[in-house]
Each structure stands twice: as C-alpha cells, then as structure tokens.
Length: 126
Image (cartoon, rainbow, N blue to C red; front, side, top):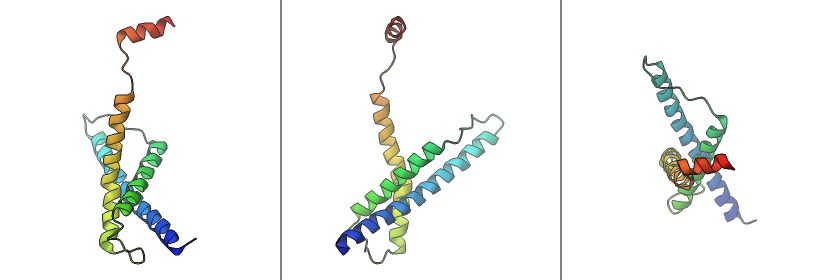
C-alpha cells in the first residue's frame, strides 16, 4: 500500500470521527430540549430513548464528517490538522446530519404509499 492511500484513509476516518463528535453535540442539544419540554406543566410527550436511532445518527455524522473531509481535500493538510479544520469538521457533523436526515425524511415520506379508504377496504378483503 502506498503512503498516500494510508494517509487518505486515515484522514477520512479522522474526519468521520470529528463528524461523530458534532453529532454527539447535536444529540445532547436535542436531549436538553426534550428534557425541558417534558418538565413543563403542559409539556409534550417525552420521546423514549432509542439506541438504534442514536447509532444511525452517529453513523450519519460520520458520513457527514468524511464527506466534508473529501470536499475540503485542498485545504486540509493530512499531516497537520489545524484547530480551524477540526472545528469545521465538527460543524459539518452537526449541520450535515440535519441536512442528510432532512433529505432522507423527504424521500421516505414520498416513497411511503398513502393508505386511502379504498386501499384499506381492499386490504381487509384479502
């Protein structure tokens, strides 16, 4: 293996790790909001913790951080990662996860067939 491939792979993994850090920050902010909402007298229903959802969002944060690393290949030096670059990768994990989940939610909502009353009747007949 060439040193360039090893450096590139390591940089992608490092960018993905910073993306996960950004997603952990985002999850913590969401958790704080959820706790505040549940403590109000007329507060909304408190969402149950879902480990599978947390894992998926952490993975999406990893992807966002890795994508940001790929897109900023010209400005990130693989041998020395500056503090600004680290902060940018954390921000990419934070904001990129919102972006990716928003797009995925739109596709999931449009792909799900709506169940009309005629569809329900046909379902009951079969």
